[in-house]
Structure formats: C-alpha cells, structure tokens
Length: 186
Image (cartoon, rainbow, N blue to C red; front, side, top):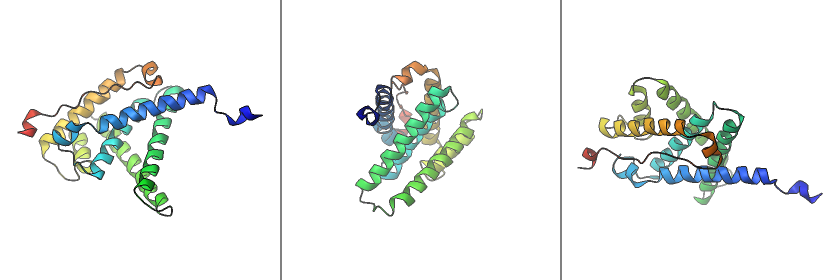
C-alpha cells in the first residue's frame, strides 16, 4: 500500500531531468555578459525577463515535438511557475497577493511566447528586435544592443534545434555563449 505514495523511479528521473534543464536555463540567464555587453538592465525585472526569455526558447524548441518533448516543455514551464511562486513568497509577497502576481507572470509568459514565436517565424529580425526592445529594454532601445541580443536569440534557437531529444531528455541543455558586440562596451 505504501508504494502508492512513493514517486516512481520514472517520475523521479523525469523530475531530475526537468530540474537540470531549468537549472541550466537560470544559469544561462544569469551570465554576466547579458548585463554588461548586451545592456540588459541588471534589475529584478531585467533578470526576470532573461529567465523568461530562456524558458520560452527552450519551450519553443520542445512544444511542437513528440509527446516526450511536449512533456519536457510542460515540465519546464511548471518548474518556472513554481520557481516564480517561491521567489514571490521569499520576497515577502503575502499569500493573498501571490495568485494575482502569478496571473501577471503567466500573462507575461504567454504574451511574450506568442510575440517571440511570431518574431522567430519571420525571415528578418524586425519583429524580434521590436519584441526584445519592448519586453527586455522596455523602450525603443539603442539598436546595437537589441540587434546583438537578437543575434544571440537566433543562435540559441539554432543550437536548441540541433540538440537531439536524447540530450534534452538527460537534462543536457546547450546554449551559445552570449558574446556581445565589443563596440557596445567601449
């Protein structure tokens, strides 16, 4: 009877895979180059936007795949949502306010996912730079940092597309090194 209450080995392995994938997303989002070379605001909002962007990129790679890929995508999203809920509570947001904030975070996720999916389907980078400027820089930002970030996003999409499902299913996430334009820092 007690076996009913224990997670199966398969579920535990899946959970470990999702934790590794999400950990890699967060680690990539925290890379210093985004905040120094690309000019992403080094604020709570800027860091949230980078985690959101990378989560969306991974979900974008997985969402239209076979059942296993869709399950990984849902797991990554669920872990993102749990992380945001936990973070809000750690920041001291009250229990009554957390659901309202989570609704906004969910809306941000789905709104940005739709904008980025549309932009990534376009041949040129006009929609992508506009979406990045609006969401990450919250302005019609200087074209150079936005263009550099758009180039990084395109490279990340290509690298994720080339990553086999077997690697992702082991929790291995390969993303390009963010290398901003050297002219941005001078």
